[in-house]
Image 1 (cartoon, rainbow, N blue to C red):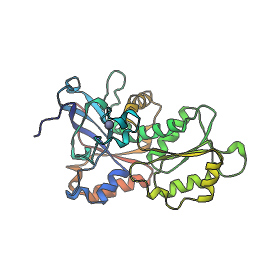
Image 2: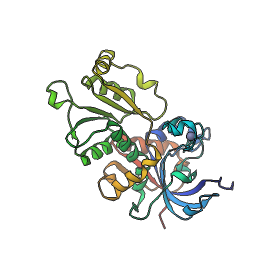
Image 3: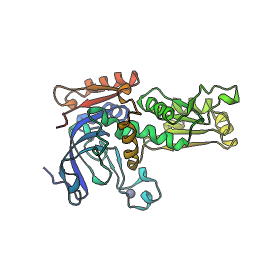
Image 4: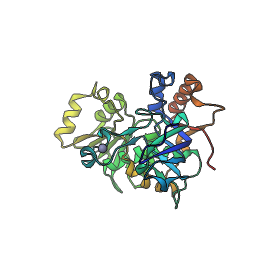
Length: 305
Ligand SMILES: [Zn+2]
């Protein structure tokens, strides 16, 4: 086996999320060996630590999909999703559904000292909950503010939980009574109809926050131009969130540890008999079924010791 690079850790995966990005990769033939095994979010145990990462040896950790270098010009300007030397789990290397991953040690979150998060659902904190949190943070709302959440998937459901925990009121947001109009629309679907629908429902001056996990051109097709112009003319904006920065993980894990996130409500846990990628079509079908029910499939590959 290749030794772990300096500053990296090798993690034996306990549980991995199989949601929209993994489903897209499976449908594109990732499991046929044409691309790395999918799996962008995981909880697992460090089985090997590279130079400079020894303090994580043996720890149970969360590993998030996007791991920027943290030092280049783009990272320093906060554009970490565009870091040229980022590690993207399941894209630049084997993903978590392969059962074993290498990741940057600096972003791995150690699950101890109050952040234990027992069980496979912890994997959701690394991406779905973190993305929901990042969307809400970008929307910048506080107690008493009004928001609308667009999307039927697990990130949308978690965003609703995060907003509720902050005292933000969710409104229907249809045109009409000004007191019922959303100051921000959190668009967690990421797909083009979701953005178009968010803009169509926006009032002038609103902030539309969109989860934009890579790609993006498709999200700009079919937008209602007149409503978008109205939104912008009123001082509003459309902001993209390319997934959570990994330094948000401790805050999100703390929310989950305090019981403020109901992860079980947005998950379907599956414990496969053998390798989950042995039958990619069956895995894809299971992941699709879960997403259609508004849940993320969490694949339990092993048990925490
Ligand atoms: Zn960088």
